[in-house]
Amino acid sequence: MKDRIFSKLEEQGVSRALIRDVEQFRDSHRVPEQAADRLLEPSMPFFGKEILEMSMGALLVGENLLLSGSKATGKNVLAENLAWIFGRPLYSVSFHVNTDSSSLIGTDTFVNQEVCFREGPIYQCAVNGGFGVLDEINMAKNDAAAVLHAALDYRRMIDVPGYSRIFLDEATRFIGTMNYGYAGTRELNEALVSRFLVIDMPNLTEEVLHQLFQYQFPDLNPRAEEALSGLFLDFETKAENSEISTKPLDLRGLLAAVRLMKIGIPPVRALQMGIVNKSFDGFEKEIVQDIVATRIDEAWTAEDIFCKG
Ligand SMILES: Nc1ncnc2c1ncn2[C@@H]1O[C@H](COP(=O)(O)OP(=O)(O)O)[C@@H](O)[C@H]1O
Ligand SMILES: [Mg+2]
Image 1: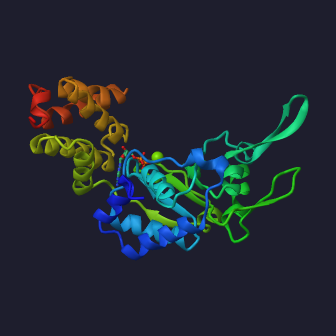
Image 2: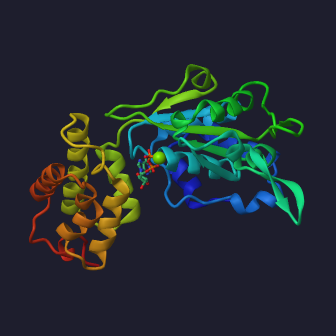
Image 3: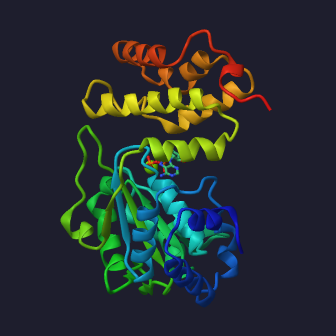
């Protein structure tokens, strides 16, 4: 059972005792057949030993986890990694103004002229021993938050309107995420916060960026890597100082740009598509463009980015 994600845990020096406990958890909690298609291997390992240990520990002792932090700190990647490490089916719900209790729990629908209950993601997560990712949970309206109260505390229960209540499977856990950004943030209400253990996700560091680049692009040359991670850290600082928004702080866009370079698109143009053009405000776009120009030589081609091999 040594897959890429597990090997990275060991490589990063995550406590052997914790890994052993997680393996025990997996052995003692089977995955129901109807949920097997939700065992999803993450596309990226999560880098960060301490954060991994804290989150694995919290879930092992039966707690729910709230990941708060700015954009691109790997909150969703961590949640996906945890579901995979614990061997649990993954259910995700994005909270927004229209998320109401029936979109979480489920609702009556007609099938062949008969009323039947269509299970929502939280319902399925509850009964299948899933890991439920409550994405941007701070955007939840009261109606949606109310559903979660009894599910997230010691009652481990969900009231299904018109039906009887259901209890959470022993293996079910919830992982909330919230962008606690540089700009204004909508607070999560106190009653909900109290039902989680909270991890404040650290901003990306040069060290984590290095691991990320190495993992995705082992043939990236050191000079190019330095320029690209310097670029991202510049954006981080500028966003922190409110000189730019968090739009250019788009690691997914940066990695996509490097993929474009790999197939021969000139670096500056690839970065335009991956990052610069995401600022639709002309003033900000100019600033972002300037930052790119100071880090990335306009004359560079794909050959300047990758080692010959
Ligand atoms: N510590 C980390 N380990 C692995 N990937 C990370 C990490 N931090 C950020 N990333 C990368 O950043 C990008 C955004 O991650 P995501 O989980 O969506 O961030 P968030 O949900 O915090 O906005 C992904 O490409 C992810 O691989
Ligand atoms: Mg996210």
